[in-house]
Image (cartoon, each protein chain N blue to C red):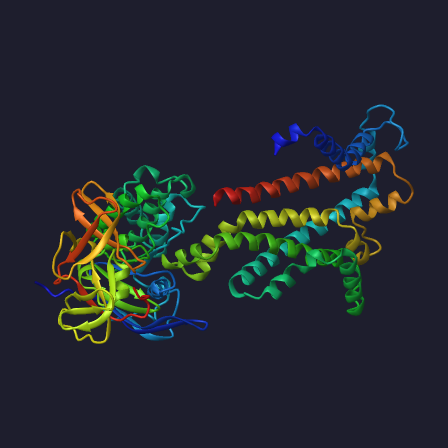
Length: 357
Length: 261
């Protein structure tokens, strides 16, 4: 297998907005032809990073290289990078065709080439018949396709997408999610999506960088982020999870009221206070068992393919989620015992951002 | 709103009285402009006589030409300067004070502005003429243009400009191809507004005008001093039609803006 090459190398980027540190010593590699996501809550610095890549902000310190070329020195209009704006930013006084041709005209391409490339990209996004229409006459999903077409027609080395699905309603959103993925494979451009929606990132991206407070917490594939989060914050941000707090012991953690809760450290050195993360699908409702926790079924949610049990443990305000395939025989109000696969229960270092559970 | 009005009849009466109060003077003026008699107060048959007198009145025509020169000149100047000020303020200034100062000439009482300008012209030993009225009108109409264009910029600039740069355009290219077309309706609305404002502006013109170059409102004022004639009613009717038409066009421009968004 060929080692994937880096397209973008970000080193030690730091940026402030006034007295607020938006980016704090961020280093990151983005590989060629990958679908990359910058994921984090609002204010985590992901948009700042995007704007630095696009060339609308200059970082305080640090460097960005694209295939070895220094990007920071290049103004936005000279970078082989295009951005699809969250608002789409289509030019309202121009037709769809003129919007898409705009970037090519700036490259001083011949009229025939511009025409053929505009026609080609409109076919790719399925809007051939809309070439003469104004953006105001299009639906939200169509506008987004035009914005996308306008960006990819430039054949950039990198396409940045700022919250690409946030302005669309639910149904169009899942359609576009598939569409973006298909387009990325078809045009072979590296995509970097900025989003606060973990489902969006998980379903589309090859790799995800989770950002918190101007720093990158973890960069991994969706599966690794979910199964092997490196911090409790990432674990909490990605998917559902049941957290227990305690002190690390060789077999797991010692909870102050529930006793020993077995877990896996995955070979990491962790001591003192720690969290134990058990994903809902790794927990089971059993009649009895070693290290089981007594709980009361509070609610049963059946989703067809799977069921989710919401359970309460005495003295714990946050409910426990257990998900299992198919239907469940558990009844609301029943007393049950909870057990879990200790191999898959992850011990994570203490994270002050998570309140005690 | 309309439903509750239908229920409460007394409110309808108040509404009717209010509108009567607003519009009866104007309709009286229009009606009396078609009066055949010499008296402005007694209606004696329908006639276009006074309109004919009006267009043969050299004094009025002279005033009209002066007013058109001032209105056109001040509109061109204040539109260009006001647009530039709006773009500059929008992009490079977050200062609330600077923004307020840019709009203040529109709010300052005309008489204050008029006296101030007269004092300034005297201090600089500038002799008064049409150009001194023209520049005086630029002072306040520029503020109106700035306000209208800035409101539009707040809606359209930002992302569009960055999108243009992102697609490879230069700053100048972006201004010409993206910024100007997207604020064009506001610029036009601002221009029409300053034209109407200049057209019937009296106080400032009165202070800054030269003795031999009266603008139309000053001509009307001097005519009225010897009594209101149906000729003045005819003139006022024409002025009103021009102003109302221009304001309606300006409003259409601003409404289109809302639709585009």
